[in-house]
Length: 151
Image (tube, rainbow, N blue to C red):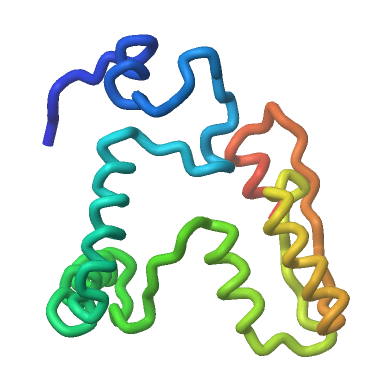
């Protein structure tokens, strides 16, 4: 499936990021949830809709949540009831790791370039449960094969 060519740069920003102060040039988009204006407008509309009839989702729109879970479950070959949407990767990592029944002596493996919040979760698990964390050092540039060989 191909769509129209999206012109990146100033034109793209002016068209899709209309709420962003034109004097600001963010370089860390992923950490703070900067989304295109049409996405933001849909989000605000969904919140407003929720407040006009809070029970509607649970009574009539539940399938709008379940349908993409079912579709994704086929890709990852699991029951859709074992999946959930989360706000971001940090929330997902925390949800999974903090709910796993770790025991003293269990081991986890992370790379030295792990995202800080995810690494902090592993440190929490070390302190809380006495698990061992094995850190694999990665120094870039490095090839895919070299990374795999380290594990």
